[in-house]
Image (cartoon, rainbow, N blue to C red; front, side, top):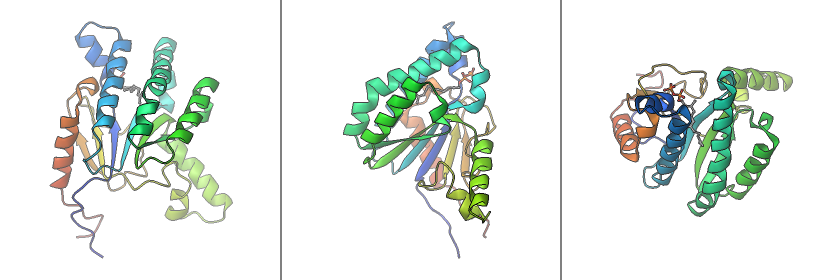
Length: 228
Ligand code: FPP
């Protein structure tokens, strides 16, 4: 079976890196970089309609990010609270279906409650914005393999059914900002055949035009999925 030249990316995943450096270059506190990072998220989510992107998955907080100083963790959690408070109505109006991937039920109880409400209110949206929170891909795969084993069959399909992303298409395009070239335990299974794009732009400076340029680049790539 030949499966070549899918030209539009249905599922785009982004590692939003460089908030700290953005702030440092301006002699601002790191928290300001994260705050501007949230604004970049907001602008990007607003721009999705018409791009063909059905799902955007954003790496907001990894299971390893708990190692950051307490103050930074708390800033990030507060940004999350404020983001849900301020943007939820707009998500609902614009047909965004919010999804959370990761062990989000281990977050602070008030955040869990806000997220439950947000998931319920956006459940009928037409395109998905998945936010990875307290997420680690190796942990996700191990848990999915355990669940598959408990059902008696450890096949790729069985594992896939137990991933957080079971209802999403595979990742077509990964973008990482800030010039770093690594995957940082993000969607390792889901990116088996993803195209990857590493850009120097720091996350707070990433605009819908950058996303469009990435989608244009993706459209030129020949995908073979192991075939020829
Ligand atoms: C990486 O920058 C960024 C993060 C660890 C957090 C990403 C979070 C946001 C953009 C805000 C929260 C998102 C939502 C959806 C509300 P870094 O701090 O590692 O930057 P550096 O490598 O330059 O220090």
